[in-house]
Image 1: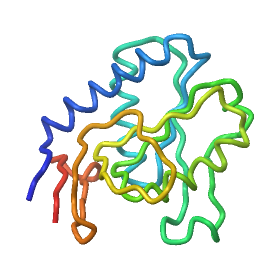
Image 2: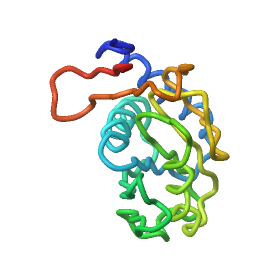
Image 3: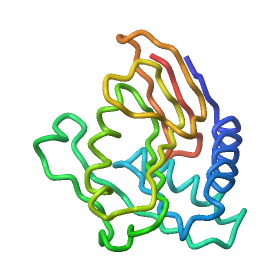
Length: 164
């Protein structure tokens, strides 16, 4: 079942970008950090909206981690840690499920001593197992643990989110 179509994703992305700017007017630069593939694709959409709305210093980077074993395999941030110092970091993923991936993705960010870390997701599921609060939410959805949300954001002409 489709829960978000392309137009809805674009609208939600624009709204999130506006909220991010409103909450970071005093920031000494923004770093948009996308997790893996879909998180990075959503981060890119947010970045495009942000760049249309402001001339603020904004950097895009990717965090690479294995969601199945984030505590075992090395987590990679594709930018020097010193570039995070004193900046507002927006950690971006497509779906926040248990919060595990987002929780572990904060590890390399903390080493860079940012001013703050906030979280933005397209779809937030309501059953967190880890201490993660999502600051910017496109769609909040109560689901069962057996249901799955799949998001298509890259290598396609039609953006969409589906509940399976």
